[in-house]
Length: 286
Image (cartoon, rainbow, N blue to C red; front, side):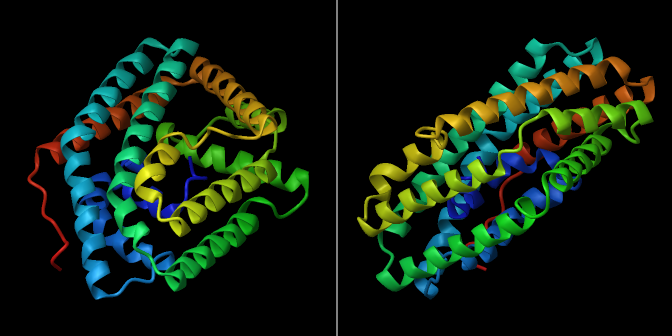
């Protein structure tokens, strides 16, 4: 999903805020942040900038009404499943549920921004291309540097930190299981890098052809269509290894760890419900 160009991802980022530790604050201010962040990709005049703000507001109005109640439902059900002990079917359900909603959010986000992209001048398209290039350099710095051993160690540390956000400190045995996961799962960042550039090229082509309104929503919702089979296979292998890790960890969770994870899910569910019920304050005129 991160392969989808950031301009579109920005408008759909709300569907990923489940990992944020200050969910309500982040969500309430996401439109302002995304409008500011878009400057890395879109060199807009004042009128166009105002239009972008209005389009971001429209997306969040839709997302608050349509998607947040669904995320609340998913978080509530996930808490119950975790309390009962996880199965592979639970993990597949969770993954499929989030991907389905991400596809829908990305489709709507792309539809909101496509008319603006179709009006970009050649100079503005060049600015967008430069934004993608800088993004690619950042991706390389963060994911492609170092030896295989260093990269696997770095991945293990990231997974460990992510899990501890949910369950608290891991035991030595749990940390070792994370290390084993990182050793077993394929390193496929080079394939990810090529796929990102493939998608960026498709976006640039459709923008130059002024065809974003016809094609961008479908590309955003089906970012994985047209992938290199090697990338698809590596991605699936990594996902299965991650599922195996989660199932093994679930069997070793202390009661305190499980209670903390369930409480986190319940808190997210409550935050989603509160946000969905609030009247949206728009920032387009600010």
